[in-house]
Image (cartoon, rainbow, N blue to C red; front, side, top):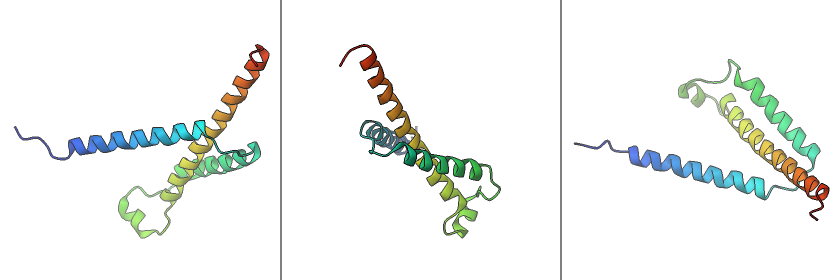
Length: 111
């Protein structure tokens, strides 16, 4: 029985992408950049609003042929804005988690 070519490579590619994504996400959460809350709120808000506005837009290309005609397509901008929003969200949640741990450590006298 002949085995289809490429299924193992495709699965390995997806697993490698998931592992690299997990590594990047964990590094962002553990070693978050020292940014102020105001800057994170502005960047995350702009990226979130951009994602919200362009996500349901009729200008978002549904086919590759339409994407190829534009230099910087709306779909590309949407993808970048979504990634920025997720990264900022991860950083904010990391900061909130750390603040919560610090609060409870002081409240319970564990310092």
